[in-house]
Image (cartoon, rainbow, N blue to C red; front, side, top):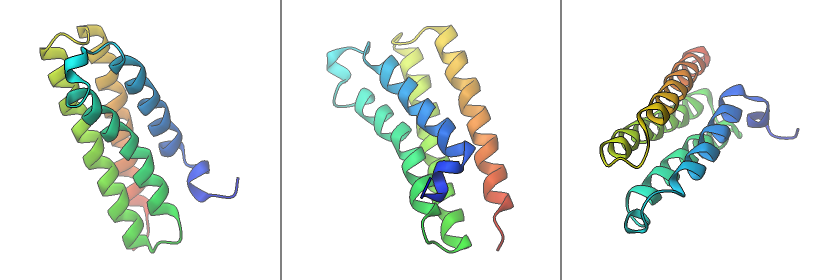
Length: 118
């Protein structure tokens, strides 16, 4: 693996999370295609994109900054979860499953950011 981020568990978890978001949003109403569906998918994709970007030739401070962006994107996803549940696009069980995955990823992102020297 030539890229540092490919070895990171947080990147792999973020990719899986984004894939799951893409699957569940396929069921959202067509009227949401350019609003909630698009926002949720972009925010989910942004988590792994920021992890990758921050790991390439950046200083520790830059990497910490990009992990912060990934955390913010994850927070957007959590908000999208709430909106999706309120609008009954996802079930309470799906909400719980995604929320738990979000918490796990949030904790790991925070630990990783704290572990970066600087």
